Image 1 (cartoon, helix red, strand yellow):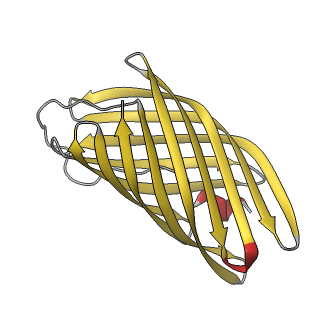
Image 2 (cartoon, rainbow, N blue to C red; image 1 turned 180 degrees about the vertical axis):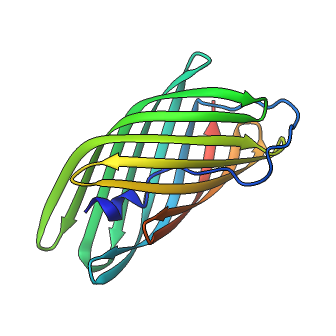
Image 3 (tube, rainbow, N blue to C red; image 1 turned 120 degrees about the vertical axis):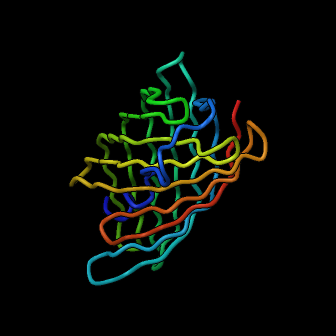
Length: 190
């Protein structure tokens, strides 16, 4: 159950060189909304699906933030999944254009099938980097670990193109032990 849900965790490792760039501001108060599409291996079967993901973050000073994530997916065969994560994060500048981000959160995941429902809760832990390539482009990479019925580690690679300092087009690739997914959405910073 958690393996298919874990594919849709938000996270990633940066792309590109870590060359020094002009000073940039990373925003930790924002809302992301996006479309998610992916496929998961469920035993001998492969299921496809799509859905909606929502994430928000609120900065608490210069180093801390709280966050929440919610996703809902409609998979083949009448299978529906939802996942909710809430937690706290730490961010630290390694360079003016490179931040380390670590997060710890409570995770609740539910799966509804024609044959019955299941849910579980546990902890999620992530560590990653945000890299500001220039004023308009940001790259992010995070490794995400979730401990529900069994443990799961996934990787997400994300990119953002900022039309304005507070509005961006987002996209990402999600990898989870052979399962894959992609996202596209928008971010509004405050």
